[in-house]
Length: 349
Image (cartoon, rainbow, N blue to C red):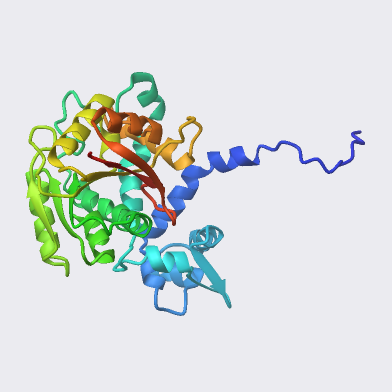
């Protein structure tokens, strides 16, 4: 018989390991709830019960009850008088039609990366992505996969808008008048920046077919007269000139160090004296110990890209210095964002 009594010293426990092991289950709860469009259906109502969810979706009461309980445990639903209603977080970010709707990024991650991450060991052993084959495929996405081609820009928008909000609140954009968003996709990021800073004008610079998509989307927004798009290849072509700031958000981590250095050199050439480059990413700590979001995002670069990697601010500082930039500043975000944890800003002398 063990007569050892508790001494008040908290012992090590495997509970944190269980939380890590449970991560895929938590992700699936969120993804499945979105598949049911649960939060959009509950929004604006007096809530839902397990019986009502079961009848509406044509499922048994047991899985309906378990799903609602799991969502409540994760802070996605609140329970009042036996009915489940959206939490403030779900109402803000998981209801379709809301400005900061985040569900498309969750769905993209679930449908594209869930199975790919199940083969993370393969990616680590082979140093090759598991979502596509760089030797045989021209792009990250199968052009025949129309669903994924449609979902990706929506997912990119979902991640960009709130991250841009965090940058807009954290970085002083008053000195800038014209911003070039390199690899800016559909213009979601620079559009959000311009919405927060009425004096700012921006240009999205991306591959020609992406730029055409951006032009179409931007024409339908109130920012059509302040945000435009230009097509080009930022590796093959010179960057457009006439801008006092160039934005690189979640672009450099897609490429190897040499490619990143080449792109920063192009930024330096395109800017005039006093112009600045702004890098926004999920930076790693300089000591290589985290943070979790940046470290896991780095592994996602292994799964998704041929040679990409998340890097530390110190690593980017060295690349910026090598490209001729000076006055390099680190800016932390004042609010947490999904795709970046700060900015690195550097000036061309």
